[in-house]
Length: 171
Picture 1 (cartoon, rainbow, N blue to C red):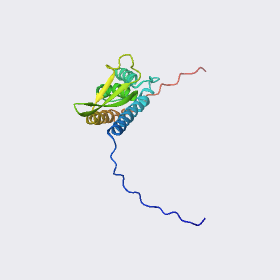
Picture 2: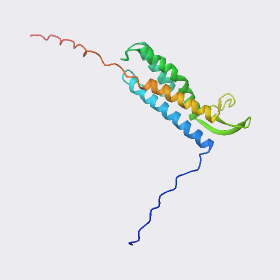
Picture 3: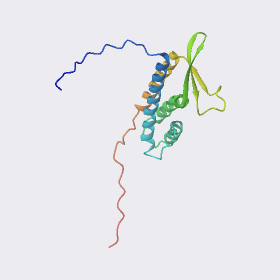
Picture 4: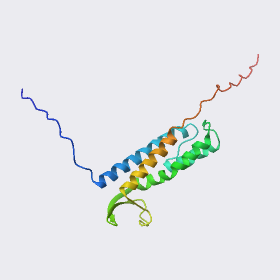
């Protein structure tokens, strides 16, 4: 029982990930960034209303709150612009999240087809076909748009809210 186990240093992994593994990794990063935006929206919407369930609906809901200028943001037009910039990526996230990925060759170059399982009525029009490099470009753009939006913070009021005087009570 006194035998010691020798621990050997692991050799660095030199195996390259397959293209399909890279696609799964990039999809995961896009979904993560969208989840970050959804959490940010949830926190801000919750101050005014019950948040919608879907990310795309939360974007519309918060745009409405911004329109009313109730949100506490000093420059609501910037928030609205950044929401609009992010909105297409929320729809893209929905397409790739609920999709099976197939690798195909187009012009002797690997492409990846996201077949949305929820859109079986006409798969040809509901598929995303993209190269690995294009998907990585989308990831970078999603990340930038998400960061631009979620770094915005409401401005605290410059003075505390006025307290209403207490109603006078009878003698």
